[in-house]
Image (cartoon, rainbow, N blue to C red; front, side):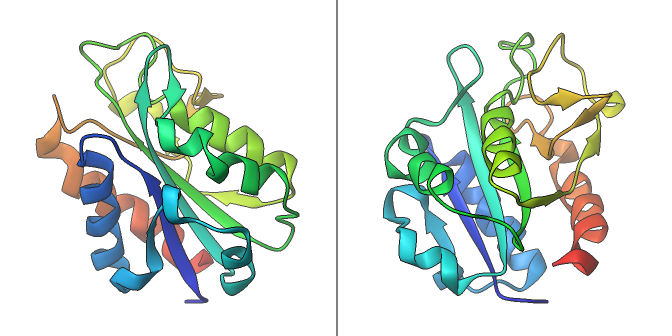
Length: 168
């Protein structure tokens, strides 16, 4: 596996825990798991692969810390040659109409900057009404719901890692 980091935004700690779980399963050391509020432009050159994580807030918005420098760093960078995978967490019961929608903004940003995005997930395995993060029946990344479907998290992560690992 090429040099990979996980960059996450987390308000309540859920996305942070998921980032750590994904890192453990991929063998990524904790110093390569970065809170987006600590992410700096110069870090991009250190990594071939980025795994980006966000929780979803409000009407399908990114976690607040992404709106600091994190999203700006991605928008101001050429991501050609970088491989990106995205994961997000949401609440399919209380926010069924915007479930994991925060992933959509990350996806649109990195695609527009030339990244190769991997790790789309079939949306049929989820209970939700709508999501901006679904394109042609697939989530743009791994959607997780620790509030209502935590019993599915490990299996979903394992399937996703199996899908993306050879491309990292």
